[in-house]
Image (cartoon, rainbow, N blue to C red; front, side, top):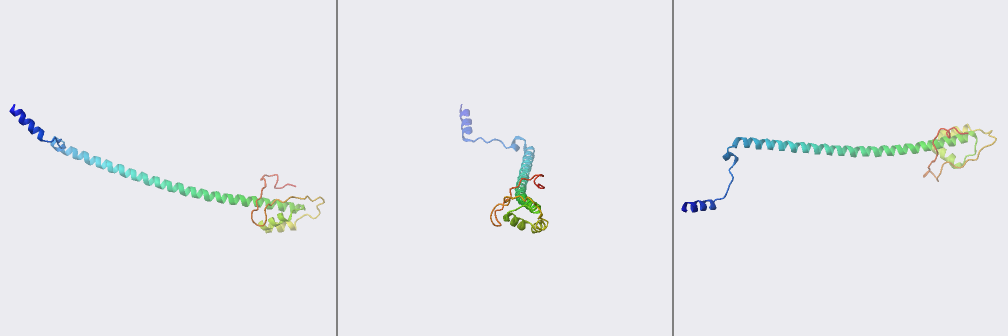
Length: 161
């Protein structure tokens, strides 16, 4: 009984500590495994950083493409407005050439948009037109600003008579 009490007091006074891998006989294998785990961990971190860099580059590229698209949209709108005004000027020039009565605002618009077309239309106008049509103004707005041409684009109204 005394031996039992003595061993109990020894056990009670000590703290349990698990044996290290080396003490359990895994020494070198455990070190190799830890080194491999560190290498895999480092590789995963490098892959994640590379992926983040690719994502950042993709975001920057998308932003640049969005800026280019907006710029292209603005250019397309400006070209569409130019083409509408050119079509309107051609329609006014055709009316002048036929000898029809064209409002002064349309003549001013034509002169502003294309002075060469205006001079050609005035020089080639038909003075012998027996029944000139009276046309309403095609060009809207006052002065040089806010002139918006609303002309339907089709093959029939370009060469109408």
